[in-house]
Structures are given as structure tokens and as C-alpha cells.
Amino acid sequence: MIIKSLGKGHYMAQNNDTAIANAAKTIREGGASLGIELGSTRIKAVLIGADHAPIASGNFDWENKLEGGYWTYSLDDVWAGLRHSFAELSRDVMERYGEPLAKLRGFGVSGMMHGYLAFDADGELLVPFRTWRNTNTEKAAAELTALLNFNLPIRWNASHLYQAVLNGEDHLDKVAYMTTLSGYVHWKLTGRKVIGVGEASGMFPIDSASNDFDAGMVQKFDALMEKCGHGNLKIKSIFPTVLIAGEDAGALTADGARLLDPSGALAPGVPMCPPEGDGPTGMVATNSVATMTGNVSAGTSIFAMAVIEKPLSKIYPEIDMITTPDGKPVAMVHGNNCTSDLDAWVRMFAELNALLGADVPKPVLYDALYNEALKGDPDCGGVLAYNYVSGEPITGFEHGRPLLARTPDANFTLANFMRSMLFGTMAALKIGMDIIVDKEHIKLAQLTGHGGLFKTKIVGQRLMAAALSVPIAVMESAGEGGAWGMAILAAYGASAAEAATGAKATGQNTPEPLAKYLDKKVFKDDAGSLIEPDAGDVEGFARYIDRYIKGLPIEKAAVENLN
Image (tube, rainbow, N blue to C red; front, side, top):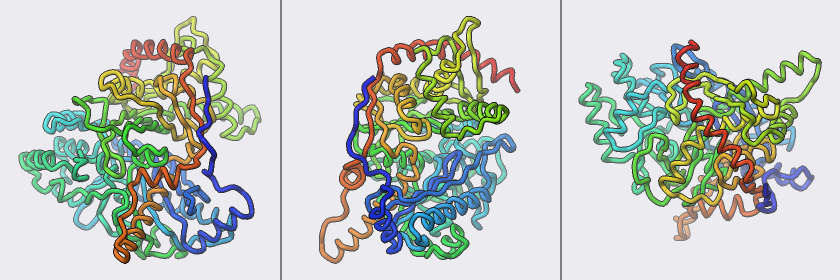
């Protein structure tokens, strides 16, 4: 295993008097930017200073619920979580810097992509929010893929909408607006029905030449809706307006400020950048928006993205085509399941510790278990894990059942168990990534990892390098993920607005491209490490994935028989 340093770090403001004084001044003068991301298990708020390093944060833990056959979150929980995370952030700011959080330079909201949020003309939600995790849209996605000659994944908003049509749902005649989670929150905070192009690319296909929904595909979809008797469901009529990073997306209204901060401390008028999805904010957080860069995000779900020069040669059901926040085409492999099953096992180990009277902090427990995995046999000693809490489209499963399997003579140790659980989080992703590498011949010099799987140093990074046979870089910002990326987009939006104002006055050029901004102003001195694939680990994972693929009928039987 080879570990390389990637440079000098600036990621988190150092805990010294000068840094604290500078951050306090930035906050007092309204120079900080805020990003909030509504993830699958956590709503996180991150405040960054002038150097783009996080200076404060706030969190709210939540979980989706299976209600009426759909995975969902209530909108009441959305606002409760947003208010809690912002209040926690405000307390953090006051405790660290002695300043109230009243003014901001920029603000942006991100969220888990895809799903179904439909509203009537009065802005009332017509059916409970259906998240990306629902996999009941297979028929709709297949028909739309054939119609558009474009892989329309089951998670995408258009698939959910057409499935509702196929189901004959009675609310469809009332649909006046349809958006994503981040688009919904942005709408309520600003009054603007807009969305970032990266988020929009998970609703309906995007034409990267126009940075808007593909006009020819829109025409085909609208004709289909007319044929189905739902002429009101036209893309341009009910979907939000698409914007690219740096474009004006409105400002925080007085009503929006009160929604987020009932205390009244937060002043309205904050410029807001286009709302984005967790995929595009992950690209920003890993400096992966330039062509031929890439990243892998590993949390509740897992996905890898490669920014490519041109569209793929053919349709692959395993690969989504989305875009960067500035509209470049991106090939993405998305697995529905990553750490949820692993987290459930860790919670059980925590119960055992409590039963034995051991008070082990959660981060310490995770680090201990993850590091134990490095002591296991390269191929996990015959232990096999399927982490399918929900369906997994890459391997053809509409529903899932978490499953642990082994042969009677398997080397069933804690180390092999943990190694198998970690390899299991990466297995579906590996199957999809092989298409990009082996069939499309896209060369990836490295991927940058972020998300909870990489919080424990080295372990997730090393095993991911083995699984994908590509060097994996992890920056010190790996655990912050998309909320930090969203805060950077907010700062970029504020910078673009300031540059536009200056250009009008001086005749100077408009702001620099996003990729250049990230290179020059955010990641110039960012710390991190790069781990090359270890030959023994690679060989061990190859044996594991071969056993995993051959064992998929075991998972199929579990789905069919465990009701």
C-alpha cells in the first residue's frame, strides 16, 4: 500500500487567537457563506469563512420512514430539521466567536436528488414526498428509456411522475409544480421556482449545449402526457427553471428567514445560489468539476462520477448521465445501498458494549471496527454480505433484504466480518464502474472519496482502492461532504454577483469558471492523501466480487421468501 500526501492543508480554521479573531470579524461583517444539505440521515449546516474553510457547523439526525409502501420524510420534519441544524450552527458560532449569526454573504441549499414532490396551484403537497429510495418505478423508467433513447433511471423525478400516470393516480390533474427536496426548500426561502443544472439533470435529461432540459426529449415526453390524457403535465410548465452555478437564484425573503430562524436574528436579503443535489455538491467538495476528474461518495447510498468529454457510446441501465453544477456531462454509477446495514450492525455492537457496562463513544467504536477489517483475509475468508436495505437497480433488485452468508468452513472472525461488510458496501458500485472502464475505456487517474465511509482514516480509502482498482484520494474535508460543497457554491455565487456588479461599472470580464475558481481559491493548498491499490487487496476483492455475483440468487431467494 502506498500513501502519498497531496499538500499542505487549510481545510479547518486553526484553533488559535488570530484565526478566531479573523473568523469573528468575517461573521460580524457578513462575509461568511452558508451551505445546508438535507442528506438521507442527516441535515447538516456548514458555515465557511473567506478562505472557504469551515468555521462552524450544525446537525440534525433524521431517518426516512416506510409509509403506505413508499419511503418518505414529512415536510414538517424537513423544517424541524432545518431549524434545528441552523439553531445548532448559530450556537456554535456564538460559543466559538462570540458573535450572533445575523448576516451572510451567500447561502445555498442542497438535498438528496430525485424523487417525487408534487404541489397544486396553492402550493399544497398532493401526496407524501416519495424519495429516491423508492424502486417501484421500473415500468415507467423502462418505457421512458425506450421513448427518449436515453437511460432514464428509476430514481429520477420524471420516472416517478410517469409511474403515477401509469398507476392512474387521481391527484395528477391538480399538479401545478414538481420539484426536488432542495428545490422545494429554496422555493420556500426565496419564492423562486428554480433549480441548479446538476440537480435538474436528475429530474430529466439535460442538453449540455443549452444547460436546460433537452428540448427534443421534452417534446416527446409532453406528447406522451397528452396521449395519456394529462396535457397539464408538460415539463416546462411544471418543472423549475434551470440555472447554472453563479447565476442569480434570488434572495432570502423575510418569510424565508423566519422559516429558517424563528428567533429573528437572521437578516433577509442574503443572495442565494441555485439549489443543488448531493451529487453535484459532492463534485464541488472533491474538486471534481473539470473534465476527466471524478469522485466517489459513500454514505447511505454510494455513487461514483466521472466528468467526461462527450456522451457515452450507448445506453447502459447501470449508468446515469447527469451534469456538474456548471453543466458538463457526467457519467454516474449509483448504488442505492451503502452504509445503512453496516451502521445497523455497529449499533448492535454498541448495545453489547452498553450491556457489558462499557461506555465507548461512537467514533471510537467505528474506528476500532473499521481498522479490524484490515486484519482480515484479503477475500474475507468466505464471508459474504449483501447490504440491500432497499432495492439495488445495478444488480436488478426492486426490493432488498440485508443478508449475511458464509460457508460452514468460512473463517468467521470479527476482522473478516467487518471486511466483508465494507466490501459489501462497494460491490454494486464495482459492477457498474467496470462498464465505464472496460466498455467505454474511460481512464481514471484517481477518484476523490468523500462521505461517512471515509471518516475513519485509511480503511475505507484503502479498500475502495482495492475494489475499483484505482488510486483513491481523500482530503481533510472528506467527512464534511456536500454541505461544505454547497457553502462553496454559495460563496462562488456571491463572488459571481459581485463580479457582475463590478463588470457593469468597469467593463471588466465576468467571473472565472467554476473549475478555475475551485483550483485557485478553494483547493490550492488543500491537504489530503492518495492511496494506491494494494495488489493483495485487489486480488482478494476480485475473489470476493466473483463469489458475490454468483451468490446473487441467495439475495433473490431472501427477497422472495422474507416478507
